[in-house]
Length: 128
Image: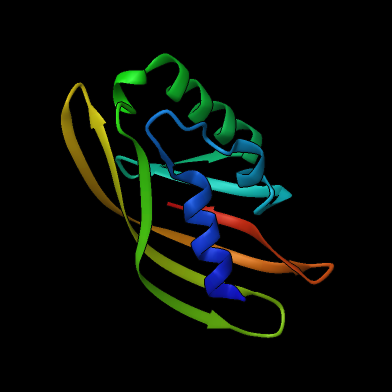
């Protein structure tokens, strides 16, 4: 169940050239009040799922040169700690995209706290 959840999470944020980003499906992976924290230059920027989705949608709309071949993000390694109340996931990923014809490949880690809400897995916190 967990590994399918993570695989589906990455496939939902990914899209091929000419394909739309599945924003609403992506939002479904999160609790409504989930906390997202992006670390840039050692500073954490707290966001809601609405803020993140809006930022990513704007990036796609206003910077199409970054998505000439779509956007792909996939898990390459995972560590899981599971207990009765939550699942802690450290998911190493690779992402691929193209900027003005130049192929880009980046690596990162998504640290997730996942909980069950009415029997359904949801991300409560995502730090990357």
